[in-house]
Image: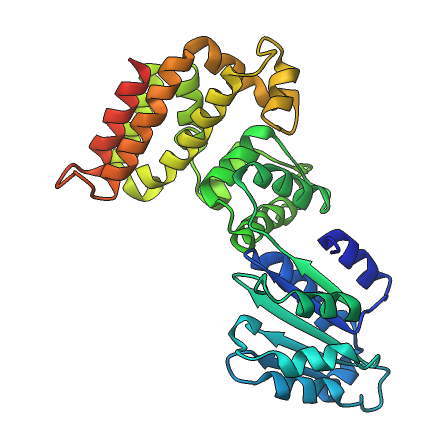
Length: 341
């Protein structure tokens, strides 16, 4: 199974396959591949007669196969793109076509929010023999900073670690929205002809995306890790008064992820070594383990385990379990008090 970068390298070299089956929970990469083919496989004047967009909820597998079997008109190839392919009920006709696909057709099937039923092994083998099978999994939280950094680096823009984490925490793993917000930052950097800046800073993030550089999940976690009671309560009070700026539902996963990793760090065979802890936690660099080194000094393994239990309790209460009327702000204050005392 090819990676996104491998597929894009082939497309840019104009090495087209007869079939592209793009599936997975993360729609961003599926859209990028399909859009690139739609915009580059044909010349603009060839698209009217040789580019077809179909939707899985509106067509059958037989109709897709029939469209793929047509020959191009006054062009080297035709492109057939099927969106929402997860809605196609029966795939027999499509599987039959893929056993003998036309070399003059590029068939792109976009199967979002899932993948081919694992029991359909022969179908998978047929796709792989016919062309390209690509799976786009949902990114994990720890994968977001590298995505942000690489996205900006490709566009000759740098970003500091704090800004990266601010954006990752606020936007989350919705890559389409994340890319859109990063584009805003790039436009802002390029819009001032007198500016020599080529780096994203926390101030720019606050100005363009609306994420406060002083009151955010990154700063809250930092205050907790360093047991800065005053700052932690200052941030919580800010969000209690400004619920649109952030909520317990955004902070709980962030804190749970940190303390879960901190629990693992306590069991690292060489927990005095920042490099060893980074490797143990599969972090991107030794620098990323700095907060866990501080956390191990400030929270024992027993306290960490109790905090994880408290996080689960607060999470349940925030969803209404055993909690008839305590507001989210009060739950967050209860949690912070428990962690820091």
